[in-house]
Image (cartoon, rainbow, N blue to C red; front, side, top):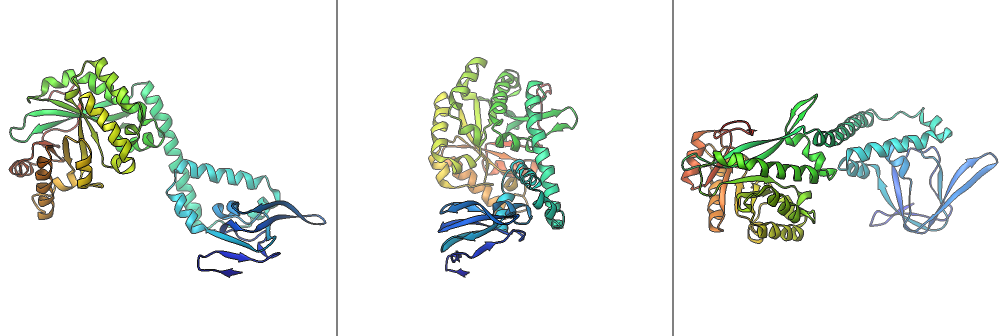
Length: 392
């Protein structure tokens, strides 16, 4: 067996690549040549399969630390691309926990159907760290499945509720608008914040249903919320996720909801993160232009915490810049944070945008932001998120 400069492995005709019972730590992709897969039977060997260029083998033992279930031998000079376990473990760690758990269950059942492999596997100890990882994975998979099923039930049973956080003018502290933030009143776990369940909604595409529910409910509630504002052009903000922005019917859906609730589209701001612009820039631009054509405003949320760049601010029709709290909170103690916020406010104004500073918790921070000519503030200093029934 030889190694070339590209880490291929070369086998000559008749050479064994691995043997039944070997510990599997690698899978192989056939780049050139052919192999035969052999199992032992009474009276000798029995070929069960021939494989050629482009095919993959050895993948079962690769994933679950079990032994090889067959012998593989080169039929001619064969060049293989190895796929080591460490690479596979890294890829699996980044994949969906439910899919990883499902894959391991399928492999276990596959091996249990092979009596010889199962008997041998009983004598093979799974490394402790691998066993621990499997238990963690099972817990992650169970949690995700439980959340996915729970959210569908929650929407049907009206367990979701919108909380609203005021966005105030820094000059006088008066409420200019509100941001809608979803909460889940779980029957057993109590009040669940969005960060604890929306990640599952985005991965299962349930985010479309939740997103439309949120928009419809916020539009319905705006008639009441608007009474608490003291601003010439009051507004309310609703968040959009990456998955929602990539939905082809989003503009039509937003238009339908606005019309049904008789909301002035100029009073609706849709908040986006820069992730949508990085992942699908062309689709993002098309959808954003459609939303602006409806009359809606667009806000760039969490500015500075993601892939911030002048290109995004120039290319997309953004009217409001929201500066992330990680920069706002320390401006009284950190010269670096102070300059980042100051330059962001100046840049936004030069591009015709207004600015909302997030995470304001003290009057000192509010006063410093006002000195920078920041337009609006949001944070516990002005008010925490609360249900519609609260009087601001």
